[in-house]
Image 1 (cartoon, one colour):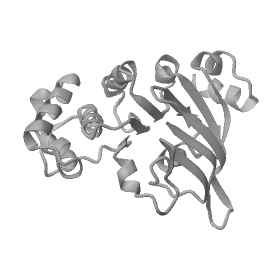
Image 2 (image 1 turned 60 degrees about the horizontal axis):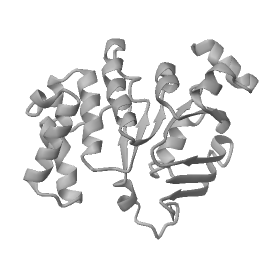
Image 3 (image 1 turned 30 degrees about the vertical axis):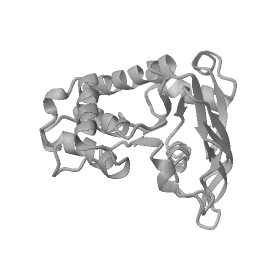
Length: 242
């Protein structure tokens, strides 16, 4: 579904190498969890997958289309990729239901009735159907992030990208968001997740990717990554976070 080849992102005329030759494939139905220390390039890689970060060089194929080609309409491809950020980015002046329906009505040209029915179905899925008429200021952090996830799902994406979706939450709210993500994984949603939640990576990932200094140091199944790390860098990282 996604094929990244020799991706580089440099700043300050090449002095800072946020990404330094990253190659990665993500297949349909996979849950790829990207871990690593702060500044390792995890979020830069994730944000490059829909060109929120424009790479310095390299190639990103999505369903066989090179989205780094200037002739490609990136907005069409962004509709295939839902993005959930660390901060929820809900429109504060709109109700939950309006937050969820405004984009699909404008971009997918769906009728108001059709998309509102879909939105209510998704709200039921995350246990928040009673909050449809609430405003973001009336929600907890965990509720806002669950809304952000189902808002992305309203666009019927082929893949969901999560950029540290729980790092801004109070600890007791982390579980309710991870539960939603676990259920999506069970249903076969293709997901790329940058996270510090090692328990989630161990339990849900089909593959774990460890990054450091803008490169992929190691990638394998969760069992192999956590129980049999090969590189000294990964061993040192896990010793600090587990």
